[in-house]
Image 1 (tube, rainbow, N blue to C red):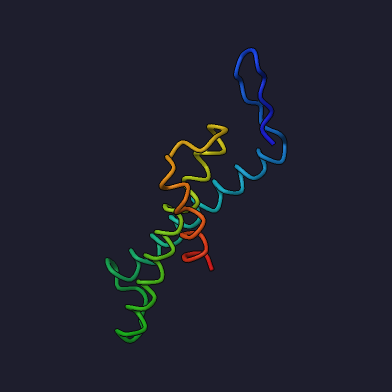
Image 2: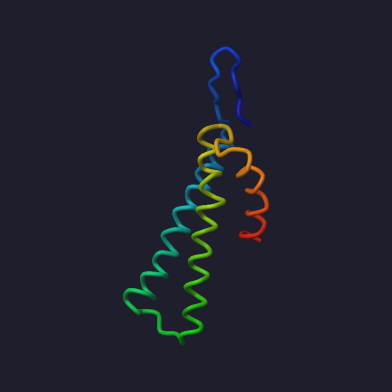
Length: 104
């Protein structure tokens, strides 16, 4: 939990929040890098040898996974760093349904 001091307004994160932050950053980086590797190898270098329908499905899954990283994991990282939600009420209300929709 975030510890707030009344006099200075400084937020101090607990050890569990630091671990969660590192986990989210690792998931975000691996999601973007891994899916970019799939897209570059299939679109630019034509390394992945599959039939066109299967390859299109694989590319769509990679793009969808990157969208999950950007829409759900990135705001969580920013919120953990800031110690509060900074994206407004609308995105706050939509973040949970988007998380369920995209992450399953």
